[in-house]
Each structure stands twice: as C-alpha cells, then as structure tokens.
Length: 247
Ligand code: CAA
Image 1 (tube, helix red, strand yellow):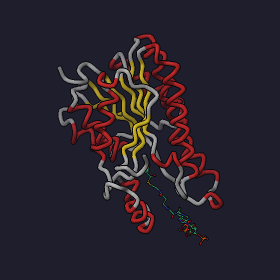
Image 2 (cartoon, rainbow, N blue to C red):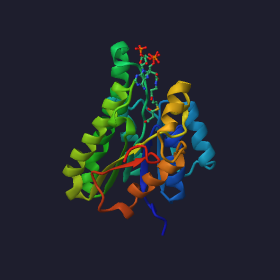
Image 3 (cartoon, rainbow, N blue to C red):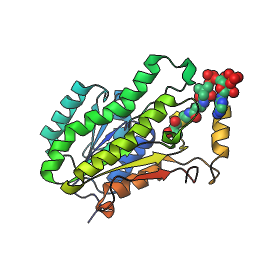
C-alpha cells in the first residue's frame, strides 16, 4: 500500500521551489489528490501540468492566503469537491529583507500576513473538520531564520511565530489524532535564495558544514515523513533541514 493512499493534501505556495517539490513528492507517495494553492495562477497551472499531465490528481487553486475571505472560499470549494482534507502543508512564504532601522511598515505587514496570519487562516479552515474525522497532519514551513538573521526581523518574527503556533496547536490537537509539526529549512536552492545579494549568499554558504546549498527535494522528503503515519507519535517538533548550519 502506498504511503499516502486515499489521502487528500493541500499545499500552499505550491507554484515553485519547495512547494512544487512537495507536490511532486506527495504524488510519488501515492496521495489521492493534492490541492495546489498559490497566488501566481500562471506558474501554478504550469507546475500542475508538468507534474500531472492528465489533471487527475493535482488540483490548482488560486488564492491569496493572507486574505481570510479568500481562504474560506477556497476551502469551501475543496471540501465540496473532495470531501476531506487529511494533510495541510503551510509552505507559502515571502521575504522583504531590510535592516530594521530602514524597514517601512508595509514590509513588516506583508511578511507577517503572508507567512504567519495565512497559517492561522488555513488552519482555521481545516481544524474543526480534522477534529471531527479524528485525523490530520499539519506541517508548517518555518526557517532557520527563526533563530535570527541580519536583515530579516520581519521574516524571523514570522518564522519564529510559526514555531510557537505549531507547539501550541500540537498540544491542543494531540488527543484528536492530529499531529502538528514544523520544518526549518536553511539555505535551499530556490528563487528566494538566488535573489540574495552575492556577498550575503557566499557568507551564508560558508557557514554550512555540508558545504553546499540544500535542494527542494531534500525538504520535501522530510515533509513526506511528517505527512505519513511513519511519524504518528511525533508532534510539536521542528526538524531543521540545513546541512548542519544550526544544531
Ligand atoms: N552582519 C552585520 N552587519 C551587516 C550584515 C551582517 N550579516 N550585513 C550587512 N550589515 C551591515 C553593513 O555592514 C552596513 O553597515 P553600515 O551601515 O554601518 O556601513 C549595514 O548593515 C547596511 O548594509 P548594506 O549596505 O548591505 O545594507 P542594505 O540595506 O543594502 O542591505 C540587507 C542589507 C537587507 C541585510 C542585505 O544585505 C541582504 O539582503 N542580506 C541578506 C539577508 C538574508 O540573509 N536573507 C535570506 C533570504 S533567503 C531566506 O530567507 C530563506 C530562508 O528561510 C533561510
């Protein structure tokens, strides 16, 4: 039996990078349906087509997850179409890096709402039903920046916020057979790290004991573990995927 047979998963930020790698891995693990959410419709449709040419398993849905009403609408459609959500992977995230003394409020607000409030929005949309079905896997993509990084007070606050959120929700839901875990990727080869200033990038790479960037599939394989029943007694954890950068 495939690891995720009959399971319905939702992945946010699924159009590219780590999110697209997660989609691919969940399909390989045999998920019945994977809803791919992103704000970038064009890139999302292209990724969905590349991974599932027959459109049988990947269902792309455009949504701004920072907007509570849009999230409510999109999950209503998901439940009407698929009847349940077993796995929610809160992956979407943005950076608006700036030294704090130069950071305008719109950069703070954008990062907190897309990276943190969105997770409140998506969890609100599934938790009641997961409690009723007494099954669920919630996985939140945090970051090693939760432990602090120059130029990222907004991003670090959002990603550290996710760790507290994960642990509290894990305690609330553990008795209902729902696990809530986090993953903290370090320097992974994606558009986000590619767009860093060259000097910051080489400095970051120098600090990784594995002496290389990670790739999105190496994050997706940890998602695969946390999304499956192989991790049934693991909850409230954060697994770092960073080549030894933080231990
Ligand atoms: N440590 C200490 N001081 C630093 C520093 C560092 N790492 N980097 C810059 N500074 C200092 C500079 O020396 C300079 O000081 P003075 O003003 O006294 O001369 C000051 O900060 C400003 O430096 P810049 O001229 O470079 O400032 P800037 O405003 O143009 O850019 C920055 C600053 C936004 C931090 C920029 O350097 C940057 O984008 N750095 C990369 C941030 C980063 O690591 N982002 C990670 C993105 S990937 C990701 O987030 C994925 C994940 O989950 C891990």
